Length: 81
Image (cartoon, rainbow, N blue to C red; front, side, top):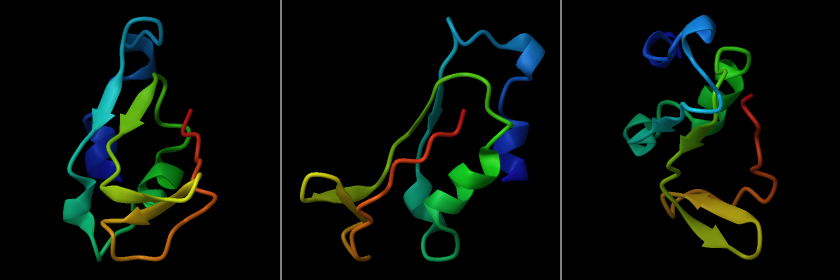
């Protein structure tokens, strides 16, 4: 989390109307670290819109299966702002 947070712009140097953060390659963390944990621990550190590219498969209307190997998370809607 600290490594990711160190790459984020400071709150006084970012503009939520102009800036956006993309988090890529989260599948490389599997199985050691869960994407949900990363998002939870980034709360309060992210001050602009952020998109995490989730390496998963859709399961039903709201379920996501991480990399197609884990059971679907049907409540995966964290907000990190």
